[in-house]
Image (cartoon, rainbow, N blue to C red):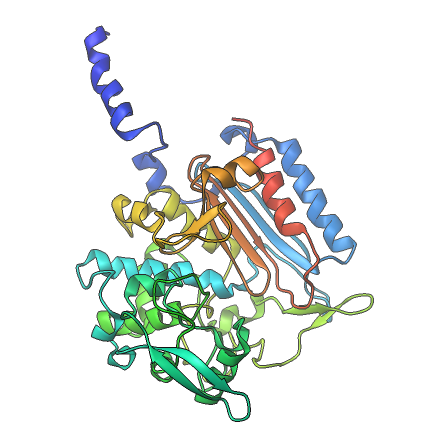
Length: 431
């Protein structure tokens, strides 16, 4: 090879850097199981993860779990532990279905960006352009504890689609909101939070939410919110399709995510894992509180919550994340452009978080150089989130690693399998 023939390669490295670029074979392949050594992971160290999770079940930290680890588009660890339901002694299986709660948000955001790629709107469009009820937003000023009445002052700008995607709109989160005043205001207005068996649509709930006061001016700070529920209704408006039908036909079917649903088909219902809470010496099904834990299989089945409503399997969610690691393509289906993926992973907030280890993009929390250097979380650019029922995931584009740990618990906040699983996964890399 002549020295001059190396110039195009050198220039490409200078321009684009040395990041991993998935091959066509990689992006068209489906996740299949291979030996850890074939993708440079340690079988011995993965075995320590298996031991850790089994010990967590044996000691009563968790009732059960499904864990999946993939690298370079191949699964190297896919195991189930413990019970899907302790009362009936139903064992956990790899194809168990879990309520993924806030892991729904990234899927909803992906759907939004699919429509954005079609030129349907701009991210900085005011949401009131599409949902007029959001026009002229107001900030909470005073609150009367006696009757939940309140006064407001005008916000300094309109809420945009970007604000809703990044949790900077100022909207609250009702029953799980950190401000008790907002919780009471949402309850009095009849806003539906998270998930429900009631006969209500996302359109009806969003229109109740729209005129309510905000925590703060749009874009001012990060406040975890029902913004992605608003986006679910927005998708219906822009696409002209019910939200669940849009996800099924445009995202889930093309990716082969056959086990991801708002409401499970009858033939899949028996694979749903019970939400459990600890007793003195075991685990029991979590009771009905402000929601019925059986919402994926019972009730009116009309509320398609973009922020919290989906159920899925470890394998389906790994497929979704692999599409992102493949820069928008999987199994021959192109979902998003690589340029759109880069925007989704960018720092979209324009404000500082109290924690400089990560920022929030358009669909995920994304780790910074500081987050990488502190250790245990992954490389710079690793993205993640989790769910209300104790599910976690992360994906590292640099190392091409995906980790998913699915559990279904409430009232057990001291278990440590989440951070151990992640830290030990990265410790199992050999190259």
